[in-house]
Length: 394
Ligand code: FEO
Image 1 (cartoon, rainbow, N blue to C red):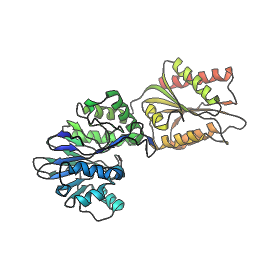
Image 2: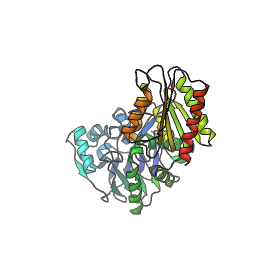
Image 3: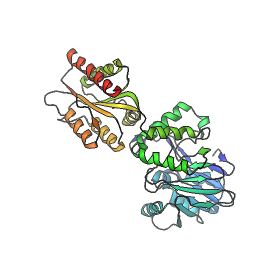
């Protein structure tokens, strides 16, 4: 392993997962990493482990720096298995280590891996002295699991917030000043939109809490992707904006098509939106994916979803997308529906009902076309796009 030092005695010992493309439904087009950190002071602490398929690599990385038997603490910030499933094997080698977790982290460790661990629980404000260094813990329940917590290294001003501020981005580089800034922010945005979006109110409160604790942060070392060291306030500000639902005059059109009719409608609606000076993005599912769609939706004021009718209902890609979007609970968007059909419709009705059930704000107008849209139909689609744009501008 090439040594990656965050500060003297603090090293990255994680692994890069170059080829993961499906992270429980999130399309991770640039792979990911599982970051673990080793802090060597008078006492030695390992912060988080990695996905179990990479446990040997993690152990090899640790062994290059220390005999695992000399690890005093394993900090488990979060028990989701991408970070904890190497814990049982690591704990076997780190046989003298005490595991540090929140109370709910302890419960979750036992429920995942059994009770055969020496676990010490911590709560917000608790500290652990390693020698010259002090760790402070901040519980972060539901960010994004009940057990989640952050570890803060006081003397180095490094925050290790596990999933928060991460990105699914595989890279040989480890720091923000070493990678393409645009790619980094694109992946940070995608990560927020597809994992953290439903937790916006909690994120706003947690940021305020950390600010009120008055802890200076010079580096943020998350559990996925790149470490923020050049200007951590940049990603904190982005999270504050996203969680405040900052959006712009932009419409995202998400659709699928069977024989091209809904495609033609989508294009005319997009023309109508653009005609009003409003930004528009058009994504055909099966060409684009739901992860990209949710990323575009994050800062949009409106979403228009189009589907042909198949077997009296919506297209499977569209129902899958709406189920995904429902779980992520995007706030403050205007949702519109359109589609084509042959004899009996059904797609627009089904989509509208699903969105109503999700509590989305729904445009009281929709548009449906039988078989193939004629010029007159496309004109109506254009006007429908104009109407959506006018509503969000108002
Ligand atoms: Fe990266 Fe919630 O696990």
